[in-house]
Length: 384
Image (cartoon, rainbow, N blue to C red):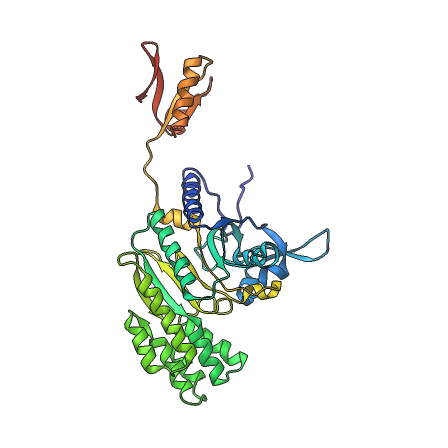
């Protein structure tokens, strides 16, 4: 007998986990709908050019590529839905004012982010276009925290950063692309000695400021320290002000705040504030987002944009099993009273499984803990 194996880091999702994921999807998309976010459904496959615009080399490396037999052009299986939503907003929707979009769909990665991570994710997210100020970043961040609360995540650690701080220092210091890339990698790896080596030839105050960045992490005191120790440039003051506004808008008890000015997640993609949510027992972020104002430029319409996304399957795994009453098993038959009783139960939200003739499976395999039985001429539910 052939052993049917899936590719590495690709998994089936079986019941009851699949039902838990589907239930979570419905609740979160309904949350987005009540906030005015309209669902879009971009295709899984499209030309590579539009999938990787404005996102840097990392996303390009994660994209599965193939040749379209109809056009001869290179196509890709999406590794992120956000660029597709930017294309829809810029090229198709053509809305003049603020536009809010929600989505949920599979994304595929040619290589996993780490050894224990799946390559097929069920990405759910929300994007807001057309508003350039921190108020829209706050709206999206608060929506992310609310989504995690609806999912059942109670212990949220929220990391806040701002890529404009590093970007401004790099520009003022006149770093070339190679040195900027090396310094970015050193900061991401928290390699302090490498940061010092790479900045050794820079002029003051840029040398001191870039070396200070790795130490600027912690509670809200980080913003005060940054305002004191970093050059008093308008761009940096503005970035610190936006981080302070986002902290002010975070309701007490909804998340523990942490600031990190050397956190450059999505540096080649994001343009301002970035944020990520963590929870106890999980080393990687369970949801992340930020501002990305330049992605739509390649589609001919650069619009201010901010958003977040998460992997719905991972989130469902963290939340764990939902309380379940169990299904009702009913006999097969054409009795109008039986059929009416089954329909009434299903209309009330109950799962009713009809026990087909000749099915010898144990009732437990049907996930049934109750049965619809005829008692004194009436159909009623009884515990098994």
